[in-house]
Image 1 (cartoon, rainbow, N blue to C red):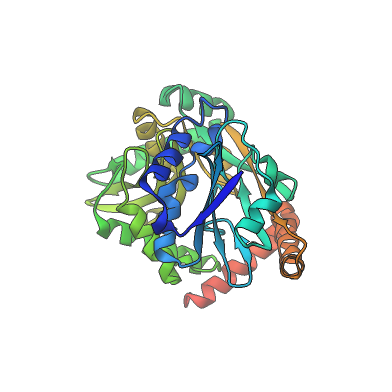
Image 2: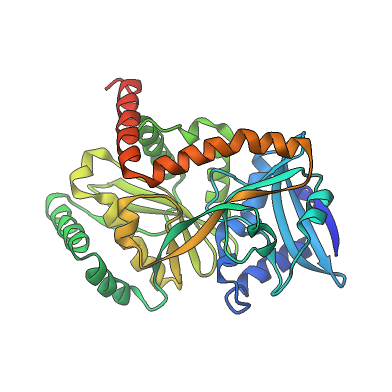
Length: 364
């Protein structure tokens, strides 16, 4: 196995084409999860244009590219999955049956450790380092929207009935209700990001869009379009203005849900839930096989899902003092967070405290 490491701008057009082709054939090759947009070259290259620490290892077998391993690296040799904390799917895009030696890979990348929190299934070289596995709900659309809705009426009948009732009420109370699946107006994207920032602050969470590089990344992805990848802004309008929106990433068969938000003035109609059903209908018509809702405990995800994928968190390491120090620092934080998230008796009070703090911070 031969390993070459590149900065994002150094990756050749030929290598990018091979990478995209592996994603396009992922389902036929028996690795459907590799078709996720967060594993695409476009996502890695966009992160690379906003951060200087992105690298790509190209693994060759018999003189041909067999795997693509994107990562971020600190000056001390701590490696992270590209977009760690933002990306909902991580790992190596590879040929069928390709297996690499993780120690050889880490040495070639000059990494003491590589950390992940959404490792996709089927990454045998890295799965030995997983410290936990978590569900990532999906909405299956490969048989069409009508089949999905019939299934939803069986699995979540109260949720489905209430959402559709609210949609009809919205149609009666507001003028000009309509949906745009692929909105190209940057002003609407700015509106969505403003809603999302306010939501983060209101609920006591850290505002991701307070970081310039994340803002730049989202805007770059909004303008990124190829045959196999696009940033998609989906918007529900009423009375001539947006009331709910979502920005996500799509490949040929997968739409990854990323940043949804809505105008609180229309909250009684649950416009975000109406938006998700409209997205599912339009995505199914566009040939999308499923919407990936992403890891995380959210009631609406359980109501919308048809099944679950699984992603892992953890790290692979070399015997190196930097790796020991990084794990000692990160492991307790991860363990505490996962304990709180997995136990309702802990999550409820913690969530209420964060919201009270957010209300104070927002001047409420």
